[in-house]
Amino acid sequence: MIIKTLVEDTTSKNNLRSEHGLSLYIETSGKKILFDSGTSGLFMENAIKMGIDISKIDYAIISHGHNDHGGGLERFFEANSKAEVFIHESAFDKHYSLRNGSMVYIGLDEKLRKNERIVYVKGRFFICKGIELFSDAKTTMPLPVANSNLYTEYKGKIIPDDFSHELYLTTAEESRHFLLTGCTHNGIMNIMEHYREMKGYMPQIIIGGLHLQSRTYTPRKDDVFMKELSDYMIKSQTVFYTCHCTGKDAFDILKQDLKNKIHYLCTGDEINI
Image 1: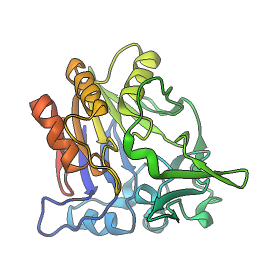
Image 2: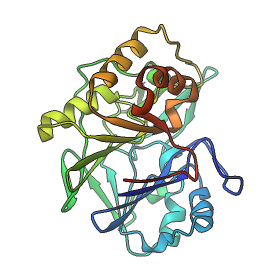
Image 3: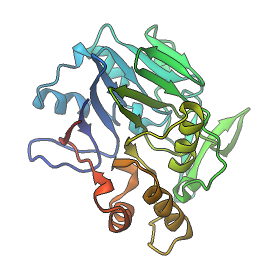
Image 4: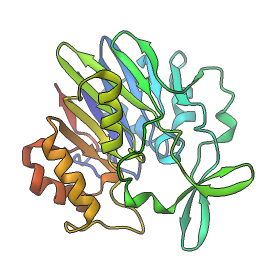
């Protein structure tokens, strides 16, 4: 499995630009996948510099309905004429962030909703052999504190987002099982437990953002949530490659406890497993 970080909040390469968002290029099970498209068309600019031909992508997946993960979708449609794009059926609902007392729209571009290449999914969905999506993670364990400023519109009212529009990608190669997430707004502990209930085992490798930091929240090592999360991750047999909304402060806290079980992915970084 090969994963290349096309866009993330930081960069490890002088010739690649970063932005607040996430876009990953994946090769697995003989397929090429775009997982999220960042906030803009920057993923395309970086892909060209990294020698990646976006027109050859077989499938694209937008992990949830926020524009820092699906903002580059129109640019993807322009660059690729064949790939189906998998999105949760409620991803195009209206989503907002509360910033300085005002609701700021952070959803996807409504004009793309009816694009004929979009495949709307919910629950467990098999794309092809070895590549699967799922949603509806049960939230029996604590949710990230950083969710507190995020909202959605339901029947004309603005309410706290329940993040039912999140999708997660699972792949398997030989004896290794992978789980990829966008922001894990439903909480990585909940998502891992849902994965275990669904599959009967835990993923060996998790890649993606953990949403542990926001404009209004910076985690501390003595936070109850961070302590519970760290203990859970230590006890798991999973290795984490994280980025984006995890935030550097949260990553540094987790790194102290998890050591070589957690790594940070910057724009331009590559994993070959």
